Image 1 (cartoon, rainbow, N blue to C red):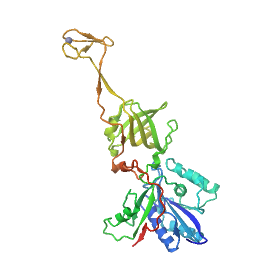
Image 2: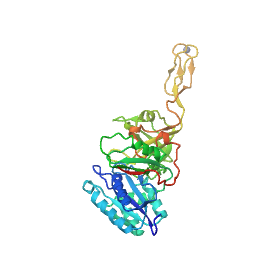
Image 3: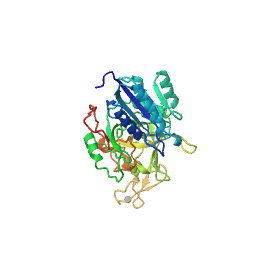
Image 4: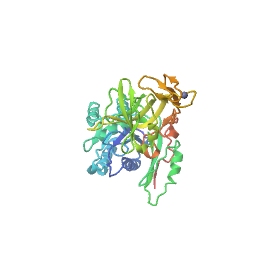
Length: 394
Ligand SMILES: [Zn+2]
């Protein structure tokens, strides 16, 4: 325990660009520096993925939180600002944000901000207002978009988590519960390159955090994520490219939904029929000139299947032949014996899909997708175990 020390939460986001360095690697460099400064880590470094359906995200839209105990918060803040300045890929479009919060407990306003950032589009203006209204110590470069994730990372509350181990130059993902097994896995990372070291992040990957919010059918904002429950109200149609589109009725709204070929659940979508009750998770795509707003489906949960009834002309009981229609509302007649019938016969066609959850193929998973093997799994809070080698510098 450090005497006269203070707790410092550090939120970092958007230091990377589609081309350049990763925020997690910059965090690794910062952690190495903090170790040298004898800062005491209070928790694992956290890697928080926010709404993946916003337009300007870099890769996984992941932000990092570091929580330490230190005697020299001011010196550390200065140095971290230097790290962000030196290593952020601002030339290639990074808009880094850095937020410091110096207190053990984190205010509700941070938690609220973080919850919204999981599924909404939050403007940098909102983030800047939050910072000035709450007099928060912060730093940014570029347009400051990274402030959103930096505030969100500090405010994030884990209700479930996974661990991710990242090696310098090599990155492997393990959704395992025990850190020990992740650390063990680091020895199995197959690499010819010399590694600098590895670091374990506590993460919300694989928790479907962005799809927990129920979207409001009468107020579907572009780039929001969440789920909708409704009834299929149009026959699914396969369009160019192999994508399947259909509509669902939610309240008095009809919402167009798209299942993309890459998800490999288009066959399932094709087998939906009007009347099926389903729950769909995904992100709202902005309307374009030619297309209306669409829910891009990230999971399809079949709640209730409608009976698939096929109405056909009746069969003559004497001749065992299909009767012919005599015209609109004129009934049916057997062309052999003249038997008459007034109603069609109904035939129930077995459904090809089941009442269950359908997820995209693993190749189409996002960082936040909750995979089948984690469906019922929740990793509860565990005490930060400093005996585990969450950081290893080779
Ligand atoms: Zn007949």
